[in-house]
Amino acid sequence: MPVHRLAHYSIRTRDLAASEKFYTEVMGFRVGFRPNFPFPGLWLYRDKDESDYGVVHIIGEEEGEASGLDDYLGARAESAGTGTLDHIAFLASGWPEMRARLRRFDIRSTERIVPTLGLLQVFLMDPSGVVIELNYPAEEAVP
Image (tube, rainbow, N blue to C red):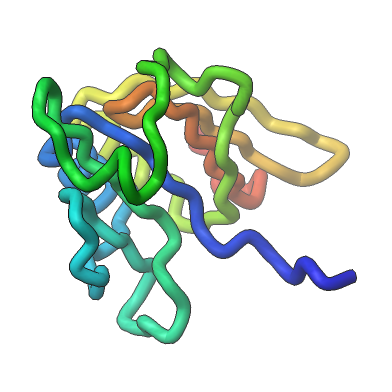
């Protein structure tokens, strides 16, 4: 099959600073190289390797201003939440540390264990209303 794997996902946001804070301080990504596009944004990476093109791309929408965004990516109707996209999922480890971060930043989450998969699923929402699923080994569940 010619499709190998998910390269990244992009989020349009009206609050670039809140998205940067969420994805760096809560999710643990880091801001890295991003080409000089004609609109504001960030590329976020998992680690120091920038051979790929980042995991999450944040696209800053400038309210009421004509920018290069519409010319570059096309105009979009304003959206709310994840629309027809239900959620984005990541494999993860270190649930106790993440749980502490979520509490520190007052981010609500829901947890459930899928016994047949040995999986702890944690669902939370980013500042733009995108649902994030984090999948941990079930043994990391905190009683």
